[in-house]
Image (cartoon, rainbow, N blue to C red; front, side):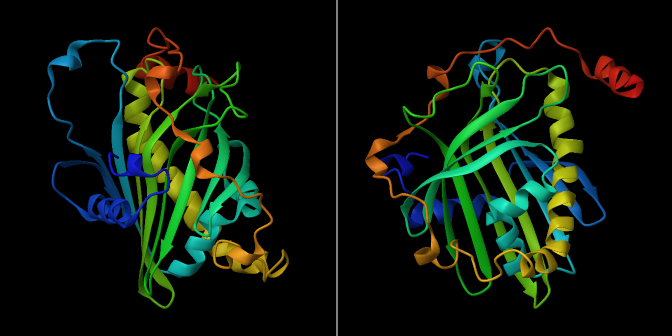
Length: 274
């Protein structure tokens, strides 16, 4: 992340570092491997501060899905198409683009539902993307802007570095990797982290895959030639000077203590009875 700070918009080194992390197997612990879906959690270095309960849990998760029936180009379009996301994202509360920063970077807002009894979350992120012959990369990280402060009814989460690497493996198949280093803020119970890595992440990726299967037919009926992520001249977003933004730091946000909420056993009972 230090290279990002040299300029708010990521450079080639940031993309290269993301690719390296997405493809690496060193220091990753497998949490799930089934039906073409793999989930890993990074083995965090041991530090003396880990005994401090006030230290926010900043974990890194990686999911990789083998897709045999959708092209890399289509999956890339699905990730970008904000109108279509409203059709397939089961967790989304609200999502919208705010401004364009460059031909391949913009700023946006996203809020989502969290498992009860936790508060729902939101983020304001800078997103940037890069396309080569057989590879598509999207990365984002949290930024702050005075017009989009934290909301009272949501917990403002932090994306330190989150993104996707989609690699073509054939004309209608691809490898789809999601990697996220995020601070959900609050004092999240252990069951939430476990559940996110082992259950929620594969579930979300399956939703994305299903969305990819249905996207070409949907797009035919919904502005089929409109793809500003491929053709920047189509964008209707206002331009914003990147200097108006700053990297969002977690320590500047209020911590919400959720550590007294349900543990995993209680949570399972609550879900079973709902």
